[in-house]
Amino acid sequence: MENSDLQLIMKLIPENKDLKRLWEDHLEFENKLEQINIKKYLSTEDEIRRKQIQKLKLAGKDKIEEILRKHRNT
Image 1 (cartoon, one colour):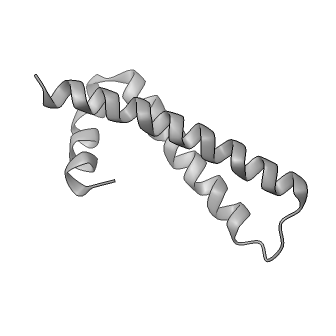
Image 2 (cartoon, rainbow, N blue to C red; image 1 turned 60 degrees about the horizontal axis):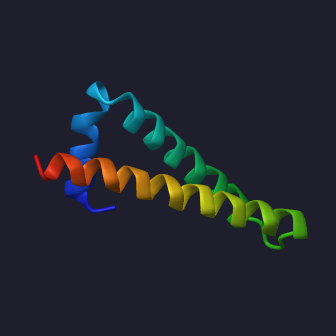
Image 3 (cartoon, helix red, strand yellow; image 1 turned 45 degrees about the vertical axis):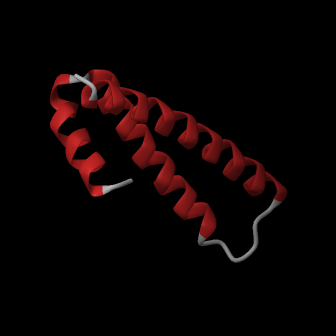
């Protein structure tokens, strides 16, 4: 994410519970992906889990972007 987006997220988190939850989920998904990606070899289960986490992270990022877009337009 761009620095300006991060600044806006930090500004809005105290007043927007949905954004706060989405951001916390985003950070958790990043952490889980890092843990999976440090493995030298991934099992089939790891590959499936990684793809699931990536999809969840992307869906959450889309929702975050939607919230940010609304605040930029107001």
